[in-house]
Amino acid sequence: MKVPLLDLQGQYQGLREDLLAAITRVMDSQRFVLGDEGRALEAEIAQYSGTKFAIGCASGSDALLLALMALDVKAGDEVITTPFSFFATGSAITRLGARPVFVDIDPLTYNIDSNAVAHALTPRTKAIMPVHLYGQCADMDTLNKIAARRGIPLVEDAAQAIGAEAAGRRAGSLGVIGCFSFYPTKNLGGAGDGGIMTTDDSGLAARLRTLRVHGGAIEYSHSEVGINSRLDELQAAVLRVKLRHLDRWSNQRLQNARRYEELLAEQQPQFDLTTPYVRKEVRHIFHQYVLRVPEHRDALVKHLAESGVGSGIYYPIPLHLQECFAFLGYEEGDCPEAERAARETLALPIYPELTEAQQQYVVAAVVSFRPS
Ligand SMILES: *Cc1c(COP(=O)(O)O)cnc(C)c1O
Image (cartoon, rainbow, N blue to C red; front, side):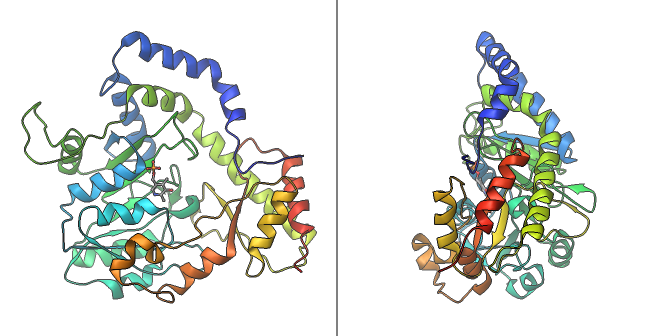
């Protein structure tokens, strides 16, 4: 048997007719940018996330960039974020000439250590940008309290967390602006790049709509310099078909996570292994199912590959140690928990269509590992 880390074919085969009909509808309209499909998807995502507005854009990376632009983040400002994330979380900040201030993670959830954020505030702090890593919301309660005391906006990097909830509220509605990615491997993935921003603030929504069309709310009249970043009609049409199935897929991911938990508890690996920690009162949507293996992680990855089981490391180099961010002056040891997570974690296949037999095979492969 082979179990890849992710297999998009199963999902596609089930939706093939609906997807091709949606694509045909757009082709027949010959309307490709900022049309009915995009507007309809924006309304559907706003409703799904529990916000008043949603504004499409070209990628999750652009969503982060546009969000910070709309909040007037500029050269010399600081944005507090996590060092344990996809690269775009950090680069959105540096692209505006602002400085990412990396606060170490909570070793249980791998999300930013909310209590440490208060100590990182300075007079230059312009925004706080937590990431809901692997599909579990960061501790937004604490972060919102810290941010509110100083009137600093929270931007959610919810790229991995569409449909995730904390205390009954959806990711994207827990800060001032929520940023989502529709990259094909995300829980709601398009047929290419795409992204969206959510907000309850009508002023910010208008600003985001302007920024994504080169800062020109009125065509050919530019009030500020924006970028070109739209969600095209083909993507929107595809995403609307898939959005109808998202909650079912999220529930299947959760079920798969529970099954891993049971199988691993039954079969007792002969090495130290920690399964994901799920906070109380959250809906974890398991974008990734991540194990911590304090010793021999790389040997386990190799053993799994030899058994035909795909795994992934998210992420092998924390942001504060990336070569391109050397100018920020961080050193090894500055964020010890992020560095440890980068050494010790690996993700197992968790996609919705995974079968029980496949999961048994994955767990058998894990358990058969013998560190040498
Ligand atoms: C995927 C991802 C992004 C970027 O999204 P793209 O659509 O690939 O640009 C940003 N942040 C996180 C945490 C992500 O996982």
